[in-house]
Amino acid sequence: MFCKNCGHELPEDAKFCMKCGTLLKSESSSTETDGKPIALNAEGSQTVHTSAVANRERLLWVMVVILVVVVGILAIALGTTKIGNQNNVEPNNENIAEVQDSQETTTTDLTTTAATTTATKATTIATTTVTTTTTVATTAKPVVTTTAKPKPYVTASAKTFLLSGYDGSKVRLYLDGNFYKAYIKINGISYDTTVLRSDFSDYVELPFNPIANSETTLSVTPYDDAGNAGDTVTCAIPTDAEGTINTGGILIDGLNIRGQINCHGGVVAGYTTDYVVNGGACGMVRQSLGDTWHITAKNSCYNYGTNWYELWDSDDGDYYGWVDENYIDFY
Image 1 (cartoon, rainbow, N blue to C red):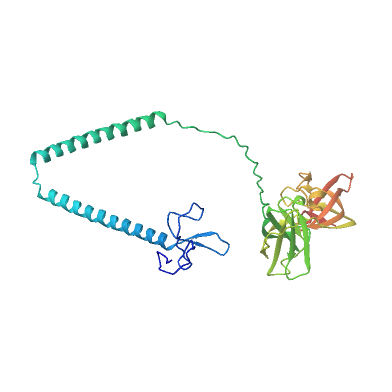
Image 2: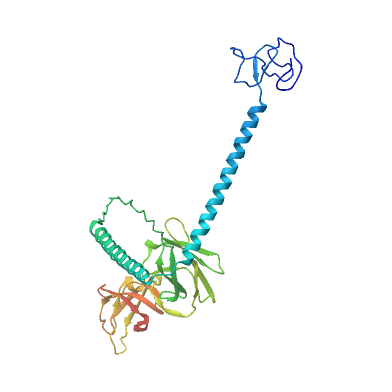
């Protein structure tokens, strides 16, 4: 017996070809599959032959590709025909006019509708716009302002005065400005001092004779109450006298000299001790003394460029005050 498929010689009782696996007899068994050749493995189970299946699938794909190509060719042909027909159609003026009128009408309608819509939106926006202002109460923090303390300053000018009671001169230093105290130094000599602003009104008297020490300057440095110094200023000490200071005279007591008044045809007055000796305000004990009155001089004082005598009446002991020596004739 030979195999119907491959022609291989087989035993008479063979059920399938040992070479290609083709089933030789049709039996009602689980190994029959529509006359297709099957293969049995070593365990006796069926294995479907794959060559026929692969051929069938390949044929199916070829048919699909052919169908797609045909459809594409038909579509191209139809499109070319339609384009040619459109090119051969002559334009119809009436149709074009109708289309243009339709387009213009549509454009007008659209423009009117757009304008109406815009106006409606603007009205709606203007009507429905609500401005909400929220006021938030805030408490301002107090601003601390620090005022800088002004820097101390001083102005200084010096004047020279003669002394009324004796030869010599003094300096008056006039100070002004904003300061607590001032440090004063006379340049060229070893003299310095510190004065408080509250201790004087206009000037400070310095024990210095500028006439004996010409071309001398002094410097003044102001300070505040915290010890901060201001700018130092300098000024010259003049040697020319501005006037005379009534400083009091040089007193000589215990004289007990006798004489008489000589008015020289004028009026002779007797002055107070405060004016002659102490340099105080001008005051008189007697406004007029008589000519040739007998007097006794007990004390003398030199002041205001004059030698003065303190007089009493020699007869009755009346007090006459201080009289200029130019109006006294001593015995």
